[in-house]
Each structure stands twice: as C-alpha cells, then as structure tokens.
Length: 118
Image 1 (cartoon, one colour):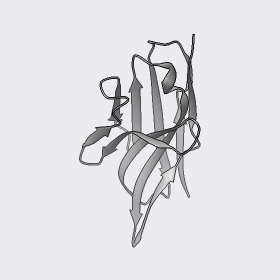
Image 2: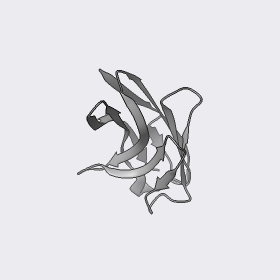
Image 3: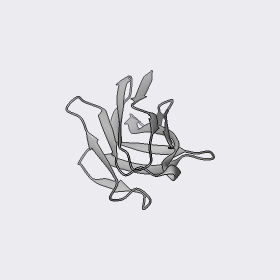
C-alpha cells in the first residue's frame, strides 16, 4: 500500500513563508511526477507539479511566490511558499502520479492545513 505523508502546515501571517514536505513510501509503483494540490473547500486544484525529468509547472495564482522542488531522498518533494496571502488558506494535498504494469493512477496524501491570517 502506498502512503504519502505531508507536513509543515500551520498558521502564518500574511506576507509570511512556509515550507511543506511530502514523502511517498510503500508500494507506490513507478512514480512519474509529484504535485501539490489545495482544497479550500470544493475540489482540489493544482498548485504545482514536478516531473521525474525536472519539469515544473505552477498555477497562475502562485507563480513567483511558490517553488516546488525535489529532495535528495527518493520520492520526497517540498513546496516553499513565500509572500502568503489570505486566499492561500487551504488544505494542501500531496499527490503522486504512478504506473504499475498496466495500472495508471494517482496516490493522495491526507493533507496538511495552511491558514494565512493575522
């Protein structure tokens, strides 16, 4: 069974910074990309994604403020969030796109909550 564990959420003031971490472990299959989504509320929306080849993309709302990166440890990613705004308040979910034989899918973490408030 695959497991994605996020950490780093919490309360931060507007204009502040926060770094989120995600580690994928277990029977993940072959991971081809990892990403951060956020949900606040409604359906999760993509925040940032990084592929195994290093390609990245961001939602327009976070470009220039957030940075996604890979860790030295396998299947670890980070999200550095700077100049946080109230509208960034959400549950941040880590996702891993994978394949295992003919099976293709996405694993999800439970999420970590980020609250931007003074």
